[in-house]
Picture 1 (cartoon, rainbow, N blue to C red):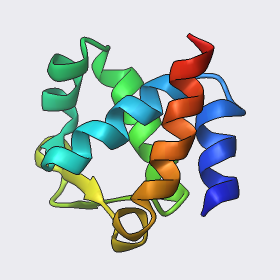
Picture 2 (cartoon, helix red, strand yellow):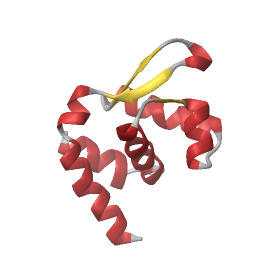
Picture 3 (tube, one colour):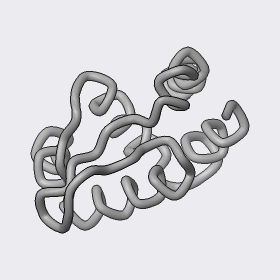
Length: 94
C-alpha cells in the first residue's frame, strides 16, 4: 500500500488532487459532482482521478452513472496512517 500511495500522490501528475479526494472521502462518501464542487475542480478531472484511485484499489463505488457514490476501500481505511505520512510530504514540499 505504501508504494502505491507514494506513486499515486508524489510520483505522478495530479497527485495532490488525488490526495485531496482521499482526504474528502475519509470524511464521508461523495459522488463526482459533489467532489467537483467541494474541491473546486472540473467534473471530468474528478472522474479521471477517482477512476485512477478505483483501479488502484484505494476507492470503491456504489451505484451507477451520475449517481455513483465513491468511498474509501477497507484497505485504504486500514492504511490511512500511511496516507497521512505521504500527505505530510506533500505539505512539506508546498
